[in-house]
Length: 201
Image: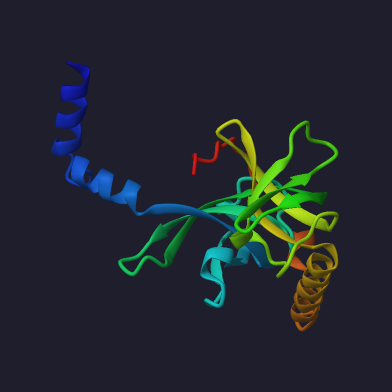
């Protein structure tokens, strides 16, 4: 049958086997991150799941949306090493990021109202960079459509996000100025966008 032929084909390949495929699939993970620098076709990113860990670099062609820029909040698929840390960036996709208002918040989760969405955005406290979010707070929320619902991956104060982006752009301009060049984001070509559905949590 078809499944038997596929299994035989995988086993017969010297570079691919069902066991290796399963191992590679299980070593992949997704998390949110922030782009800190784009220069000479190389993107530098920090992963929120590995806060405090040094930035990761990857080639621009891993971005599956046009014109990645400093401060973008993105969804990152990466390969884990034996210690569970990011060893290789596989692909990067931009996340919807909008201004919203905290509707309610409990000990571990809450909801945010985004005017352009018909339903509230669910969030967990561990993805919130605000120490004590309260009802009525205006926040910047980055979220995805997951299993038919809106789920936040990153929440921060609006002023904090603007400051981070300004600092990142200033560092990028300073670095480019040393070689009398424009910042790289003005030079690179937009890469191809590809559709991707985030896996259910």
